[in-house]
Image 1 (spheres, protein in one colour):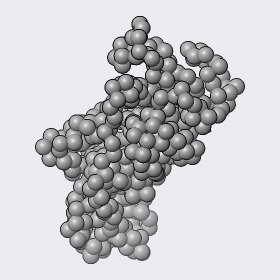
Image 2: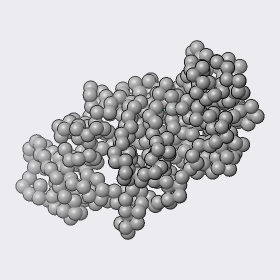
Image 3: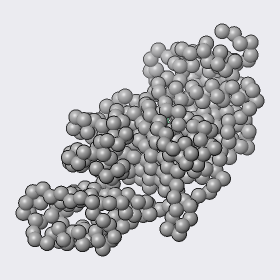
Image 4: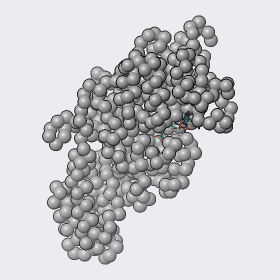
Length: 438
Ligand code: NDP
Ligand code: HSE
């Protein structure tokens, strides 16, 4: 289809799991994209690390490939730079170069946005350029645009969800089939869900980066990865999962960002990522495979839920394509994407002040007075016990205690003191509990 208008010219940085699907969608949907934008899209170059890499039957001229990403970004015939490489450098240098030169940027790079989004937003403001990053959080799910635009008339109070597909795939497999951690991680990597270094997934860095991006948009405040309390899921054992099942729960790696008051009464935000037990009746409990789901709570809108594929080449490419269309339309009409909204400057509340509940599994000697001694430690730290369950006898007794909500600092101090008790042989596991009590 000919629109008569000159093409919007694209430079693609990265042609791996996501980039190759971007190439495919640009090719397969070329006619519709031209009709929607009002001009054709033209891919003028693709930067990769290894020119000789086998890339299957990509519908693209091999002459477009280069290893000189910066040279490609600087070319005069580039209107939009699409970055699907990942990492902090050299991606930051490429994107700031593009933005300062007034080129639109579409990126899926959550690590960079969470580490130093400020530099990108400042460069976009300086160059009068668009910065789009829908694919950086929750893959295919349209989530950032609703936060960035649709909810701008409301006041968001809380964002909770599952934002890492790899760990959700692993935890769902452990829950459903009792699969081992390593086996499930290998499968997630094979399916293209995991990061180049899967430590980023399993240790919670990827989810923390996404939490920072979500909190920045939700609370109009620059939140970086360093502001996010992070605990990965490598410590979750088959025994934890079995214990969760016995309580009618499952375990998920959650991201929680909330507005609230700190201990001095000042409005602040708390952002954390950690594994947590949730009741099976909780809507997040049924989110399986590499799916993501995010609840957004806002004062006027109430509760909203976003659900869909959170990882994988094609779903992520869908979000990238949406941003390319938006950026191309803006260029044709001379308009711009909404710029960064970070006027609120809310301070970050420390994890110690976050109110949560703990599930603690203790191996104790089953002697008279043990329960009273253990309960005394909770009372000392003003932590109220919701349930206690004992299994085994004599030297093999296990106590499973679930608390009511208390500040994390009190709960952590309770666990520290329990470790010091001679009647506690070991603390088998400590997990946070979210959702209404099981
Ligand atoms: P891959 O590792 O599959 O692809 C990375 C691409 O970047 C490869 O094509 C690689 O080249 C290229 N590359 C690496 N270093 C350079 C360099 N110095 N110069 C030029 N090209 C380079 O990653 P993904 O496609 O999985 O992820 C890309 C981005 O998208 C990351 O930021 C990731 O966090 C994000 N993302 C990924 C999702 C997923 O499900 N995979 C989902 C959402 C976001 P070569 O092909 O030659 O090796
Ligand atoms: N590694 C990421 C995940 C990719 O598993 O969620 C999507 O951002």
